[in-house]
Image 1 (spheres, rainbow over the protein chains, first blue to last red):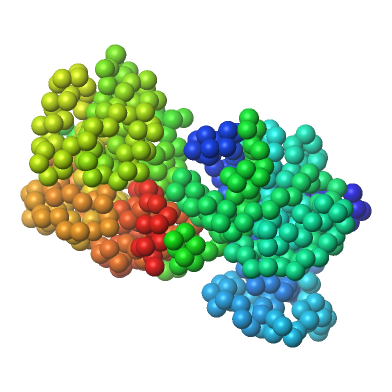
Image 2 (cartoon, each protein chain N blue to C red; image 1 turned 90 degrees about the vertical axis):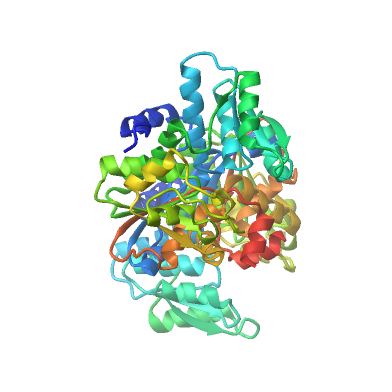
Length: 320
Length: 320
């Protein structure tokens, strides 16, 4: 394990920070799913987390860690996704300020939601700007702390609390299936599993259009891919994280991929049978099980449903 | 109160029967809703109940009451809605058999779901058959016990357990808003409120196209209306129940109506902000609040979300 990786104690500290602030999301069972897959499933419904995604866990842990150690001018990140809202709300709860760099062409709803949590949103041009340089400059000029969406030990430790809760509630698991984008969620979960339930297999799921982590697992080194179009916008990354990759390399057993059609089928089934809303990335782990990519027969299977931020029209388009 | 009405003790007995068998459904809070309405809302998410609707509570209480007192040949009902599935599952759990009379033109999915819970489904012609006579004949020939979807004290007492749980979890309420179809749910809830929280106002909500209970409340006697088309198929009834009407007359403060458009707006908001699936009838109580039919400013408001049985395509049609 890389020296920089968080340990189980970091996840436990994160859990203590999140207690009473993050939701302890429900673990949902479904006889229909169990019959379809031949195993016993436990779905961790992180779509019911604050801001509608697991991202709140990591962002809050990072901001609370910062503000515990003294006054903080503010935090910043470049994100147009769930991390932006998670960081904005976390900053508000910790009585500090978030500044979010968001591409000019980000959806108006995302911008409004992020501002709604009290953050300042600064636009940039997705094609011409170097967002890393822009972020570094902003942080330096204003004295802000950067909270990266996944390459941050505090963010990874926070994400791991989802697996901690799932183990506490569901009991022993043979298999844990987790969506993979930048790898923060699966890294945190894998650290928990390695410490508390080492016999449990950890399998990651990526969209076919963005299979950088699957390819990296196959070759044994960080691969970079050309990201194609996919509905799973939370998982459109070209290469594994610098910090998350060594953790995934060491602790994740396998990474498989799913198609957009398979994701939509999982979203539909979650809606109709479990009465759960899932955004495409949020349904990808279940999609891999339903598509037969990961055998579940006679297994106790934990599944991370990572988020539910999708508007009704978009859901309607996808399932029609 | 009519002598035939169940009392709070009947609801408590129902709660004891349902313990460990029905789900204790979550009470969902939403800052967005609170800000929109100016009150503090507590949503009882009965869409997450077994069979996807509150109907399981009443059906199970009825069947368990029967089977506790001795051997039962079986139970029957005429229903193409959630009561059919609720009775089918309840019969299976109580080791007896359900026979469901369902119109030939009922959706194939409803028939399949009911059969999937182990019930026998007998078709009849919706236009030519007298369903009451058919049901009485079937019950007599086969020695079956009829479990009416709402005009049954055991069903009403079972439905009341939803309000009991809501009061236990949400604490004091100024207002409780409940969808009204046949009136079983609101009757059970009103009995609980009258006994445990008499200062709480109880308001029912009907679709405009089927406003029999609102009209009956206005005139003070059971009115019959011509039911028009509405998306709220769980609430398309022409007249209040024989047993539920006197309870509603005595214990419900007001009944208001909502349009289909208002129901869709509530379904959309539940999906996007609360990540909850609701069928049209299930969203009607919240719709009345959002439409301003029932003031909520500065009030602690309980809202019954009664069911979530809607397929993804139908939801897509409605919100598009």
